[in-house]
Image (cartoon, rainbow, N blue to C red):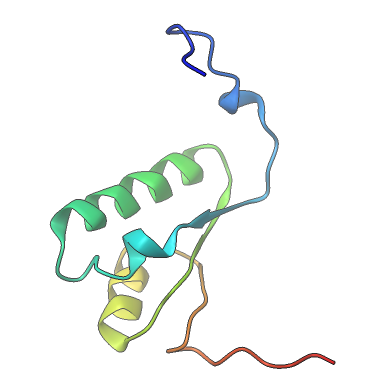
Length: 86
């Protein structure tokens, strides 16, 4: 649904974490557009006091870049593989 300017209710949603979609994280080392999106999502979350989590961290370069951006939480195969909890 298309909403007129000023009718966005997202600013009133109360959340503790923002998870940045893996499609942005996966290629942020080589794709400037993805890197800019990650930077801005994290900046906006931080300004609202929301913790940022990056998913799909698959290599050391990506993890290093996330650390440079001061993104506090990350998940992905570089950090560990999924475990069967049963």
